[in-house]
Amino acid sequence: MDNSLRDSRDISYAGCAVQVFLFAFFISAEFSLLTTMSYDRYIAICRPLHYETLLGSRVCLHLAAAAWGCGILTALLHTANTFSLPLCQGNAVEQFFCEIPQILKLSSSTSYLRELWLLVASGCLLFVCFVLIVVSYVQIFRAVLRIPSQQGRHKAFATCLPHLAVVSLFLSTVILAYLKPSSISFPSLDLVLAVLYTVVPPAVNPLIYSLRNEELKDALRKMTTGCIQKQ
Image (cartoon, rainbow, N blue to C red; front, side, top):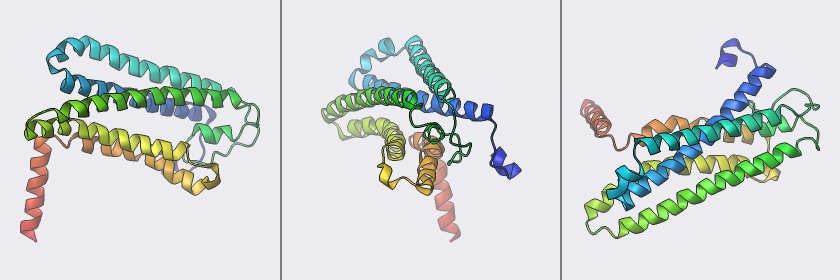
């Protein structure tokens, strides 16, 4: 936003480092919190009588602190490792923000292997979180299918659908951006994919999580009815 207002494409070295840190921090913390939320829904649906015991305020505080702590640790490791590499291939990042893979392209072919291993380790951590989310929802769906009333099943699914929508959007855009074949990697596609996973999920999160908000639904219903009447 600052570059757009100043009609500039320049960023300082320190500013680029801060950007990498914040990006890695929010990505890691977001996925950790999404994993925690899947556990919350598992307890709420599969073990509702033990919800207050298993997920009291202190437990929620510890889970949130663990998610943010994991994000800070991951961001520190990536930022320190990335900017300890010699950038000998110029200073032009082919992206609209300081993205780690684009910065690695500015390093020599042998010196960025450490960062690649760190990226692999982060990928393994994300995979573990993904497996936990899948296991949670398998148990949830098994429990929901055993609910005798249709209203009860609908209520349980309505609790999970916003979270599932956010997880699906977040994972699909990140996987598409980072795991696409190198043969189809070119600047314009990388730019579009980066916008998808950095801008779209945060933009639609408030809307998706508000789908169960009755006041929002009533306001949209009144607005739609008013527009139809005016026509």
